[in-house]
Amino acid sequence: MSACMGMRIATDPNSSIGVTKPLEPDYDVNRAGGESTTEGLHVGTWDWHSYLLNGVVQPRFQKSCPQTSRIVDEMSDHLFTGNPFGFCFFSTLQGNSYIKPHTGPMNLRLRIHLPLIVPQKLKPDAYSTKPKTKCGFRVGDQIRQWEEGKAIVFDDSYEHEVWNETDEVRVLLLVDIWHPDVRAEEREKTKQMFEFAKGQGWLKDQQT
Image (cartoon, rainbow, N blue to C red; front, side, top):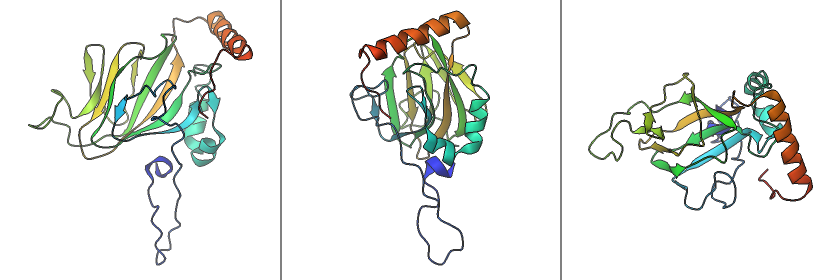
């Protein structure tokens, strides 16, 4: 996790342990125009470190996180690729941060959350604004709290929001996959549609 957590970045001349430089976040969540960059969408600090960014594999991630890359590659038949709305990334939400209610662009995909680091003190207190958990998310009318190592799959075309009211960081691996109700021939036609739109210049430049 040092690649996205920024661990061991302070140079200690007396240490025999090498210094690992973390990856810089690769998606500007403050820039308007992208899928998750609606103006005023989030409060606090939310970083992305992407394996798949706008449907494109990022070599820098592959180099820094080879084991994660290999595991994700085993899902290649299901990854939401061939279009600008496919993502796979480490999502790092710092403490006292909030992602406001929003919806995904389509219902052709499902989104997987695999929690890797979850704050320990999750019980709401007198200062909490959320009634069930200090670190969790809502999809529609359902609220869920992450548990490390237990994946959650949901349709992000429904309105959803995310919060971390603790003082600790929350990290998960997010993976977009094709919705199982979308047949193989429909997937191929969808990819062709996006390729045509790109060739016509109808798609805006994506962040890379």
